[in-house]
Image 1 (cartoon, rainbow, N blue to C red):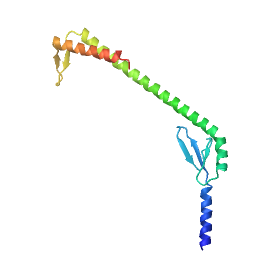
Image 2: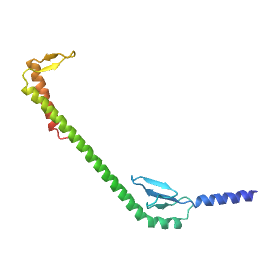
Image 3: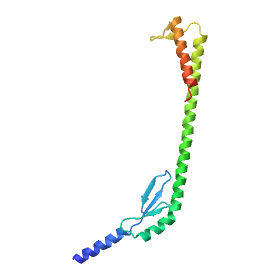
Image 4: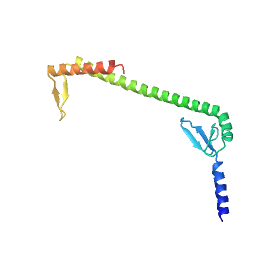
Length: 153
């Protein structure tokens, strides 16, 4: 009975010890491991505990240049995608800044050209501004134009 258990243990151990694990880089640039690499991906054999070094190192050496080129291409593609996304975000920021600048300039223009300026009260009626209030509003509007339109970022 002991011999049968020993034989079974050796057979199971030899099956586990001869398992091959592959390492590859996916399209997002992340390193993946598995017993079978996906189709069209260059993968290298990972040397496992209990495997023979000569057997595992030969395929690893021939697959390394392909895997590194694939990884490099994936990283370059990811960097290009990131660059395009940054450009899109920057364009959106620029458009928003232009709109804010145009709105601030329009507000300032109305405050400069307007004769009788007012604010709408809580109940919807007009509350006309005094000259001091108009001057304060003009200064605030000018600061807004300078801050929004002339800021470098």
